[in-house]
Image (tube, rainbow, N blue to C red; front, side, top):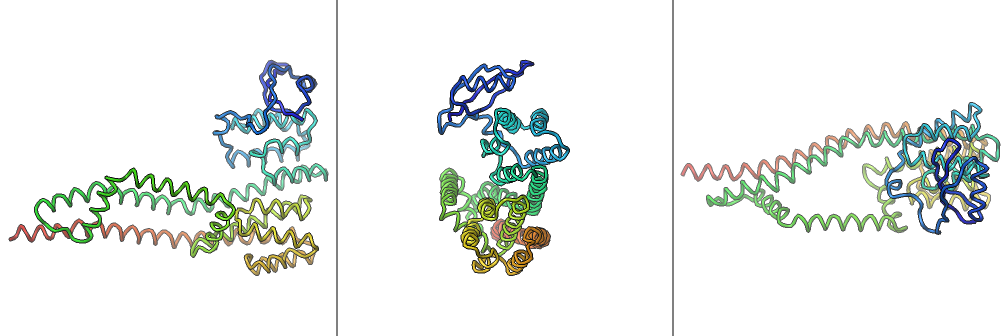
Amino acid sequence: MPTYIYKARDATGKLVKGTMDASNRDELTEKLQRMGYMTTYAAEITPGVRVESIFERMRRISAEDMIIFNVQLANMINSGIPILVCLDTLDKQIENRTLRITVGNVKRNLESGDSFSQALARHPRVFSKLFINMVKTGEASGKLDTVLTGFAEFTERQEELKQKIKGALFYPIILLFAGIAVTIFIVTFIIPQFAEIFMKVGIKLPAPTLILYRIGTAIKSYWYLIGLFFAVTCIGVKYYIRTEKGRFNFDRLKLKAPVLGPLFRKVAISRFARTLATLVSSGVSILVSLDITKEVIGNEVLSRVITNVRASVEKGEGIAESLKISGEFPQDTVQMISVGEETGNLEGMLNKISDFYNMSLGYTIKKLTTIIEPLFLVIMGSMVGFIMASMLLPMFDMMKVLRH
């Protein structure tokens, strides 16, 4: 069935626009009339062509916008407010233009006969596969309010974890970039001026000064080639990581990194446990839950492990045994999942695993911060010391020349 993009006016004259499936334009117009809209424009969407404007594609929907939307929707559904009234209310309150337009489209798709999950599935760039499948399960079980509340709590915890990691790494990263910028400025503009003064009076430059002088002049002379090299390198690495092999190798490197590796692994395991627990508690089948978890875990190495786990579960085997064979999940995680399967409390054990790793992440991040900050200070101190030495050594030679 073709999809149409349309513009219409409601009873008050307000302009609305969106997309809707219809056999032809007459059926589209009839659907909109039943919904209380008068069609002013309709055009069939060519397959493969995006209907969003350039502005809408550039206007991103932040995680905070989605969390607020999820929490508000869950609260209103729990209060017994009909879904159409909820979406109409949110449509008037949402500040983000792209999300507001999307919610308006979802509301009109509901009015035209779609289920809530079908309406959400029309916007995969806005609503995650996890959210759509949970809504579908909530509709089937009649527990949409419970499912939405669980998902709102899930997104809040995930965002809290993300902000915790960003907050811990913010200061060291700022310190690193500031140090690099100052160093480049000194090496490029200050050192060459000193070096030229020394060379004019016939003083031989010491090795540290000569090294920095040549680096500085090279940067000033060939800055465009250096910039081009870094740009090409970054683009090449980016495209390589987008490939299946590149993504796998990059994620494996992250897990094996000396200092950050344990942090990446704990984040991925926490996300795995929380996502799977949320899906299982919402009534999603274990096979579908593993499929969704595989996509949202954020690490290709562990994603392949979950693929193998799903194949084992499909054959009637347990989750814990497959995780143990992979060797990628810690022993305590495997043991807790095994107990959860044996006692029939898999959801509870998965939530405990996620809570434990979230708490452990706090200690890991604190420890990481205490290591990184002094390490950066030592590196920056060494760089400053080297620069100072390169500037002072020729001065000593100049003083000797002046004395004679």
